[in-house]
Length: 273
Length: 284
Image (cartoon, rainbow over all chains, first blue to last red; front, top):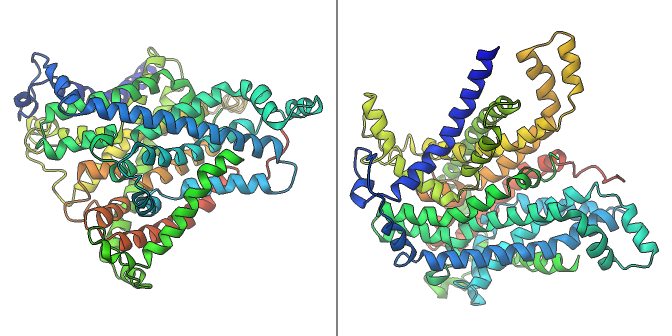
């Protein structure tokens, strides 16, 4: 029995290795000289070349891309929350007793979520291009805000479905309006859910590539677009590329790890508690 | 209601109207004068005879089926192995999240580096095992798609582990104990008690993975750009290639409309059922 437990633990740690080794390889390559990074035989011992990071940050333009990604991710996630909270409140607290409206809205949001993003790619590009919103932060932020709103409604609805409606009813009897009830009585009880939503929308926006590739350019490129650009125009200088990759993912990985307790609940849209 | 409507409604209106308009026009992005070329249903009839469209559907189906199946099997197995006390559990639980939150573009590029035919470490390891050290995994039409699927599995198995593990921890332990008292053990417990109880969670995980895998873009684009030829060209990459590399934005829209429609018709009824949206939200 003891041996079996040991084997189980060993298997789990093997899985952990499988998850981490590529990431460690990415980090170690980012500290190698270009010759070592591209050598046929792996180089195990080397002096860390911190200047790879300086190159990626300055001449590689990662400083600008990081600023762009931060602005886009934070703004779009906040818009998602501001738009999503009232709708989730409406369909779980206000409407459930009056007909099918709540169910229809929830279903519509789910439908929009299942629609693959490629459907909107060319229509949004054509429209935003006509409006002069391509290659601007406004354009990509708006698109990410649309997806953040869908995500927020789905996650917050899952949390609020089981929220006791008596609280709202009592407050209404005391004469409070809907907005006041939502902000004063319901929202303070769902800070965890709001934070989970915020974390997941940040990750979603930060990692998004399809729209970012089409809608941004030059100094409005987000981190993933800038990183993928190292492939072509530097003629694949692997040490700079990997340094850019580490810079570009470090904040979101760190943030994801810090907020890990909220991930599982938010990710499954309330499928697990 | 109002703030969400302000964000969502304009988008939906624009997407639907522009998609319909673009798909019946023959616009080419680098020739602005073509924007008004009405072509009727030509784009649609062209799509019906498009070998590459068929190929991209085939690639996406293979990607989703193999990718999600392997993720589920591996993910559930690891979650079951982790559902007990063992040294370092909180740390393991945190660290396996890294591939999952890693930016897909970076994941794709990291594996592209590892799989490089001349300097890739995988080839070095295979070489030192006597299995040959010059496999061009990503340049070989018969392995390119599998290589991308491998990275899909690497990145998203932790998602399955995290949610299934949370599901396991929220299960009511009493059926488990009752079965144990009745003499069930090991595999019997897992197969006849744990997995059936876990069914609702598993269903949601499968669904979310299918929705996500079907729109794969970043991994394909950074690892193979759909190539060599069309051997790993998933639907998103084909639409992107048609619209923004060949600049045939009208036809690209038609491809997106047809494939999205097919996908939604396939997945939405399933999603509605599995996520409990079809029953009326009752009073808690």
